[in-house]
Image 1: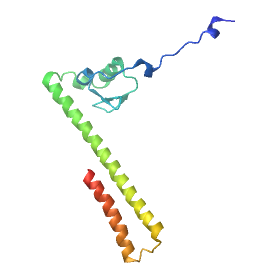
Image 2: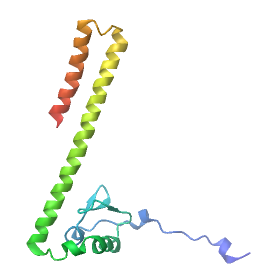
Image 3: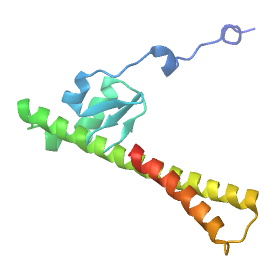
Image 4: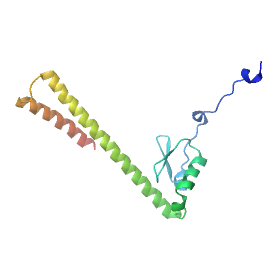
Length: 145
């Protein structure tokens, strides 16, 4: 019997290494940490493994030519501007998602009214109830955003 079969090698797992995002990478390499993902502020790509080598390699191969000369206060302003752009994009995506969810909830309310009341759309009171249900749901969406 060989020694290799009796000894099991344990592979390292990324989760067990407890790697975390270093805040210095934001100014150095234009990366931020969003939901435990390392996101490039310039191209919005994410790095699979949070290691400085990977972050630096991405920055040097894709963005160093453009941002190498930007230093000091100018770099801080550039980072701040890139963060604002990312935040704005995230707000737009969130707004679209909540609007779609509100429309879906409104359609469910109308479907519920149709199922419970079993009335035709020619009945004015029934149409009024449907319109009120939809406007109530959509007004709740407007208040949230």
